[in-house]
Length: 79
Length: 130
Image (tube, chains in turn purple, green):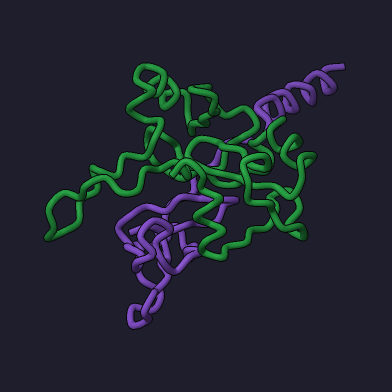
C-alpha cells in the first residue's frame, strides 16, 4: 500500500506539470552567410539561416541587425 | 504589412505545413494563425484547427514578448490573450509584466536596436508579420 502511494507521489511530482518550457539559448551572433554575394542570407543568433535573401519590404540586401520574423518556424530577414 | 503572405509569395518562399511537413502551406489569410510574434500557415483548414486547439504542441520555438528570449513552450506555459492573439511566456513573471502593459510588448520594438558605431535605428518594417 505504502509503495503504491509512493509511486503515485512520484508520478504526481513528475507528471503533473506536463511538458516543461525550455529556454533555447543563442548559439552565436547574427552574420551574413556569404558577405560577397549580391544578396547574402543571414544566419541568425539561433543558428537558423533566413529563408529569404532580400528584404520583403524594400527588396534590398538583408541586415543582420534586424531580428527575424519567424513564419512556420523559419526566419525571415529584413533590412 | 497587413498581409505577410503577399510579401512571402513575392519572394517565392514556400513553407512546409507545421503539422505535416510533407504538405506545402497555403500562404493566405484563411490558412494563417498567429502565436505571439510568430506566424504560421497551414496546408488545409483541418491542420489549422488542430494547431489552434493547442499551439504549444507544434509551434516549436517562440519568442518571449517580455524577455525576448527564445523558448520552447511547455504544455502549461503561462499565456495571455491580447487583441485576438495568444502570447506565451517562458515564466509567470513575464506574463505579469505583459498584462500590466501589453502595448509595450505586443510587438517587437525595433526602434531600440543599437548598432555599434551607428545612430539608434529607426523602426524597421511595421511588423504585421508578427
